[in-house]
Amino acid sequence: MREHQSVNIRQISRNRAEQVGYYRFLENENLSELVRSLSETCEPQVEGLHVLAISDTSEINLQSHAGRLKPKGLGVVGNDQDLGFFMHPTLVLKAESGFPLGLSHVQIWTRALDHPDKHQRGYRSLPIEQKESYKWLQSASASQHCLSVGGAKQVTHIGDRESDLYEEWATVPDANNHVLVRVRQDRRLLGQEAWLYAH
Image (tube, rainbow, N blue to C red; front, side, top):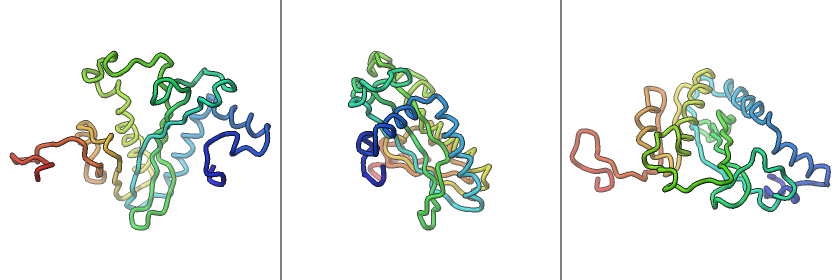
């Protein structure tokens, strides 16, 4: 993928056998073992360090390969039509230099082929555990486990505007874990009448 600057399976494959291999890999139910081993590999790299745990979501759109893939294990992506899945990795970097140390956690999920929209699901009234945005809390929790077992001195969890959730601010920060996100919600400053945006 790095060499060809593409995630198109045809473009990254040297021959038909490699294409088939990639398709089998994507359909393999044991992918969770790979995810677990990534976390275990990251643990010993972080001992005594201040690390950045950067999370974001990628959409893997496989619609152009729909005829060659079994739909089992796949769902719809962001447009609620194309076939694919979502991936939410947490990349761990050494804070002082930005040197990559590994992945502390990777979540992979699909939406149902008949995925209802937010209004049909009553999204606002759902508990956080039933929302896709729960991925931020899961990433932070799993990363905290990996990084504390590995002996990280300090962790700064970094996310985009989508991770600006009250639940994350209420549960993740502690003496060794900090949260740094691009703000989406205008909140009142602690112990003040002033609001964040105005301040």
